[in-house]
Image 1 (tube, rainbow, N blue to C red):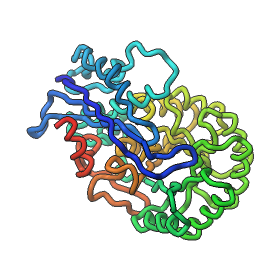
Image 2: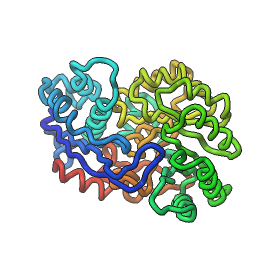
Image 3: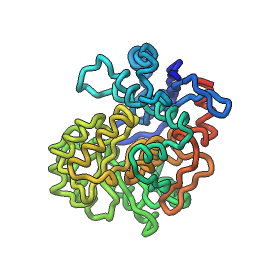
Image 4: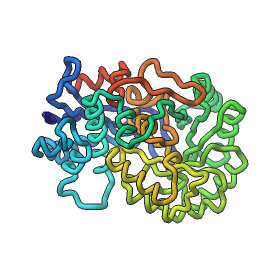
Length: 387
């Protein structure tokens, strides 16, 4: 049993949308295939992965460093003790050989993308859905029913409040009970109008989260906090720079409602510093660490250990990214849910064909691996790379 090839292609996921910080007109993502010599049901086992939106494709790093370290390693060193499957932790160690600590940046995205593909292959070799494999390894019961919320509400050329309301209404019509919109990319008074339009549209049928994408300095973050505390929001997300823990802690003095952050922190050390210094409150706030951006599930397991030692429940984690990898982690390891992009970043967003949102929840299908084979538009894109 061995990994015989690691392939990468950079794909466009461009869109005219923008948030408070960036536009997506030139956005790309890396699609990776980890090809093994194992066969299941007459087909070679190939694991697939991709990086989350908001960070660009990582082809250079993957091809120049991390791919070759896997292929040059002794194949036996990448297997379990029994030699009956890949060991994602050992593959991770091979990728990170000769890497200095710190400086997580884009390196964490490249490793996280390959790590997703390795776990997909591992679960396929085991003949299990990834969420069930994770639950079995952790000695816990899997929970196939997972909370999801609909992320959208981007700024878009020519998009007025009527179109914003229609977008949010469409999410409710598809079964979501929490929706999210962007703020901070327009003057405060305009954002106030947009927020109130959405709240009026969704009424008591759903709750609204708002996301500033790290745009604000402390003064602006507080000004928005004074506005937002007038509304029954699900959360106020990423007000300031993700590494400005002092800003996050100060903001808690002005905003008593739930806050969310963490999608742009890429290691368990950064997660620990957020919990130490960011003023986050374990009884109400939410953590959004995304395995696809932060060295993958191997590192995410370390982050969950940090949460436990810091007195946090993993149920306070609702990862960023809207991908099926985090959905499997939520189901297998007891997270609080997962982000969802019903319409954006296709074919990488969304769920397997036939999976529907019911009262804010989806039920995981019984598909080996991450479940990419169940999403026809996505798996056809993936198989062009490696099959």
